[in-house]
Image (cartoon, rainbow, N blue to C red):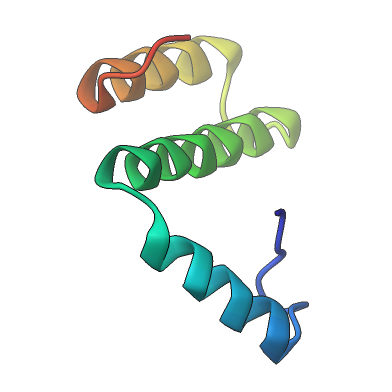
Length: 69
């Protein structure tokens, strides 16, 4: 489920909260990783950071969160 903050209905938020409450710690951590990776990707796409900055930040994020690429 992809919800864009500020464009959600109450029902979507409620359902999202129910789903979040049922997720394991590992699933929540993975979702957090995906959100943070998405932000890095958006920064890169809009020229806010360089490819090198993106790659370094992504590498650090992967290491800190124990994710695989």
